[in-house]
Length: 123
Image 1 (cartoon, rainbow, N blue to C red):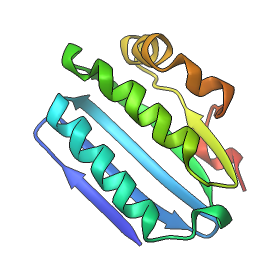
Image 2 (cartoon, rainbow, N blue to C red):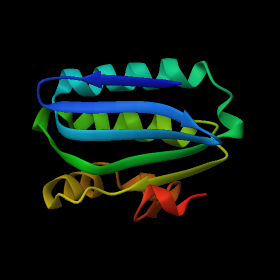
Image 3 (tube, rainbow, N blue to C red):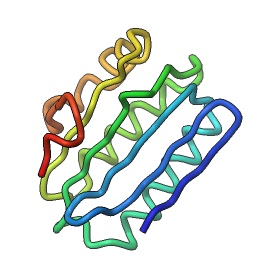
Image 4 (cartoon, rainbow, N blue to C red):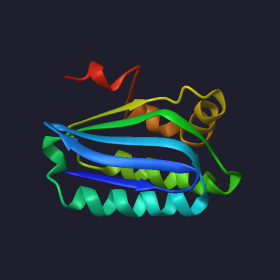
């Protein structure tokens, strides 16, 4: 299973590979992009048995978000944290601004999701 959404400034995908549910986000997210992403994520995890999957969020190519997406960070954090995945990992953005945005607006996520440097670390 693979779902991919490409917009003008951003691209994201969700796919299942073996026992992994991998999310990849790239580019610059607007408020509408963020809302669409969150709805798609919630809909998609209802269609899979997430308790048998490892969540891997690959944000390495994520650039940043517009200021009006601040509430999105809180909402997506809550959804990631409350989801039933057997393990959860995140690759932080290479872009310094995006990295700071996540740390500033979604800092509670780090109590529940482990930071890794590359998705290939998880086998």
